[in-house]
Length: 87
Image 1 (cartoon, rainbow, N blue to C red):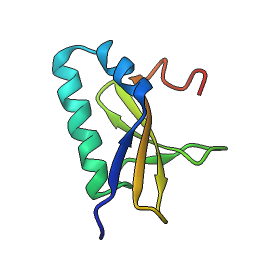
Image 2 (image 1 turned 30 degrees about the horizontal axis):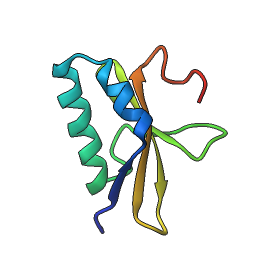
Image 3 (image 1 turned 45 degrees about the vertical axis):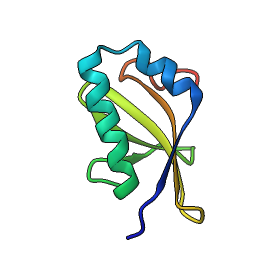
Image 4 (image 1 turned 180 degrees about the vertical axis):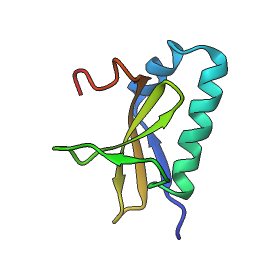
């Protein structure tokens, strides 16, 4: 399988600043893993959207996969209770 390029929206940096440093490392590791396998075990496609989500502890990483361009676009990172609000 070809390696995907990672693209992270600027708003994700703001999302990450609100997390504890220990958790940021875990989330970033999970994001880096998406370049190797954009559909890892446990990922789910969100209904009604062309987005996927993957869990990292109590956090969720929302992302889009552009297979024709081999790009994974991370659009949002947050606590599971808040991440789905307002897209």
